[in-house]
Length: 318
Length: 111
Image (cartoon, rainbow over all chains, first blue to last red; front, side):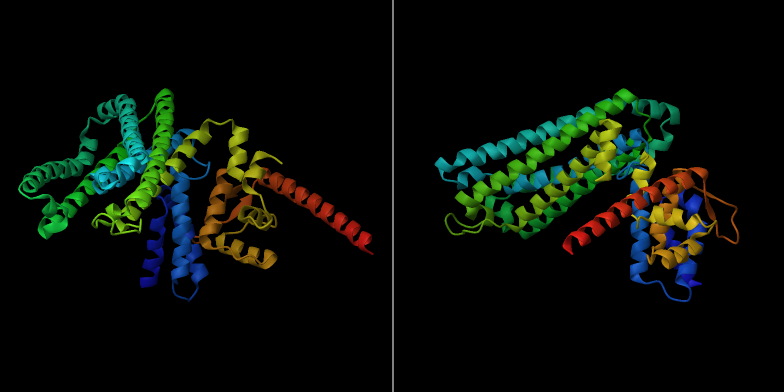
């Protein structure tokens, strides 16, 4: 009885439309296949992977089974999610790189400055492009609100709004606290403040995640016009290029800091450290790399749909 | 090769090709397909892979479902599926012939 329940639970890896069509016969196959033996981890994993593949195919994340408009929309939304991840990485970099120029010899500052400025400019450009995407989606969103009278969609914004209010209150509280502390206390000297800052950073990530999730859910329901979808597609390609610029210039900045001021990366006194490896920076760059890879994947999904069919079929086949 | 053929059937051990080959001898449900493929090709397909292939083949109109019998749904080849299978097997035979002919030439040259 319990195994039957466990086998049925495996179906949850598949999208609901697929379950409705193939669910029962697939269950019957799983039971036949298992016979008297128990569910192994390998068996569960293979079903989970197949189910996720089906979900990705249906949503247009991979493959060419979904419609072109689904692939474009999904590609653009992947870039939006990627940019949210990039914002988290960028905020981490901004905190890590605070006052970096002061730690560097004057004659070595130029390249590091240039790299950091490029990161900042690419960050601003990417954010403006995302804002442009929101603007392009607005007429469709208004149509959706009118068609559904807003009631069905209102719930989507409840948690993001609650998180935003908490974040505003936390920002005010933390800023007031920070003003009463000196530089050393603000930078790890006061453990209570450090803990509060970490909690605040987590709150920022959660709020950003909730807004992104709400945005993705709503955008999947919007009936985009062909023209709007084309705009969204190319804005997404632009954002993915901004992501490449961000991670490229961040890497250059890191190299420069490693060469000329490794002690800054280690948080030690000038001239005392020689290793450019900082755990914080490794995590930040990994987050940025994840964001860039996701953005490039989404942008390639979008771009492939605009290639002539012959070319895209050839690229897909590879 | 047609686009459908190229899209689904790239290698002789591609699950869609194995399923079409299995269904060429008559309709079968999921478990019977698994067993048959295991027997004639020596390939063990996982249930997820099998149903992924069934989904794609049905969406492309190469196979079609029959009435369910005791929670098991048999599938059969469509006319289009039979045509595609014919096209693929002809192409494979042609390539195998080329390989065999060249191998004979190479062996002959070595003697």
